[in-house]
View 1 (cartoon, rainbow, N blue to C red):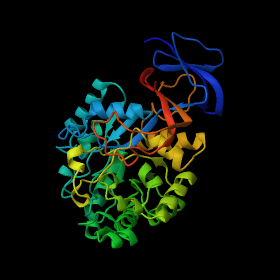
View 2: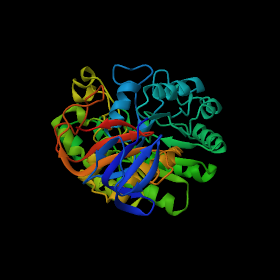
View 3: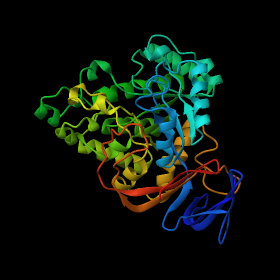
View 4: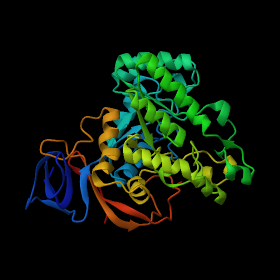
Amino acid sequence: MSDLVLRGGVVLGPQGPVTADVLISEGRIVEVGNDLDAVTVIDCKGSLVGPGFVDIHVHFREPGQEWKEDIESGSKAAAAGGFTAVVAMANTEPATDSGHLARYVRERGGEVGLIDVVPAGAITLGRKGEHLAHLDELWRAGVRLFSDDGDAVQDAGLLRLAMEYISDLGGTVAQHAEDLGLSRYGHMHEGAVSSRLGMRGIPAAAEETIVARDISLVELTGATYHVQHVSTAGTVELVRTAKGRGLPVTAEAAPHHLALDHTEIEKMDSAYKMYPPLRTPEDVSAVADALRDGTIDAVATDHAPHAAFEKDVPFEEAPRGVIGLETSAAVVQTFVGLDPVTLFERMAIAPARIAGLDEHGRWLEPGVVANVVVFSPGTQWTPERFASRSENSPFRGRTLTGRVVATVHNGVVTYRWE
């Protein structure tokens, strides 16, 4: 492994941003200083150099649906987006509900070697919401975040048992908040636009009732709880109140919920179909403000690839979900505009902490593992093609500001924009 210098960027270290070089050797940061040299040098002038981004919510589809995405193509997309670690959701086929499946996901990610692929574990067997998954096995296989993502655990009694069990283990319960009684048969946000289009909608209450219920269960059990893909102003207030009461609650927002609203559905383009759906402009503003002030801890893409033939159907018939890894930082930079420290807090530091990833989300200083991203905040570009196997992006063809220049995983350059 040859030495590497990241030269002349604004380095995000424990004492804040400073213009410097970063010397990397044997997989670790050796020195942060001036006039450093190595065999390989990357010019980082005008760029931020900070901890590699961490995404705690992706769908890599392997095993079972590799035509949409597999761990190799997903890892390439993640590296191109500046990520050095991701948490892969359990809604594979079969679901990741036992130890051997979690080990497969982790080991396959290691074979590809571009990023760390960390498995989430299902809360219930087969994600069917009827019986608890093999939680002990999953824990021994290294799972620290448990979710039936793609579905909410509808049975409050079963979720209580899961919270108690996972709390004893030391893990985190993450919830895809969707009350099926309110969301079933819906395709977009329930509101003025759905009424105008004559399309069955999903009210904000479908998300908020589950989050309110779950926060009550957090009080009852003491479990660490994470709200996935927050999309409404009401959910923001529930999370803010829970945190104000000292409850162990964290939350994430997806880039599309920070940037786009339900008026996009008037295009009838299935690239804008996702769950939770795009909400009102007021919801978008509330979610973005919550990311700024820390009520929402992290950005997480909910990267959900689908093949072109699956999405190229009438809107109501299309599967839900959009890709987001390669555009995530650019969307946040373009539509939210965080300062450098807060950007890395929300995209690296906090998500690594939530996922329990000690070698990621570390401010750059000598001795830490070299999981690093170089991000040019002022570069404009227009995404047209993707490293992902799928191209179902609502940001395709849209000019964005902010571009990943290079990604370094364990001291090795895994992506470089030329």
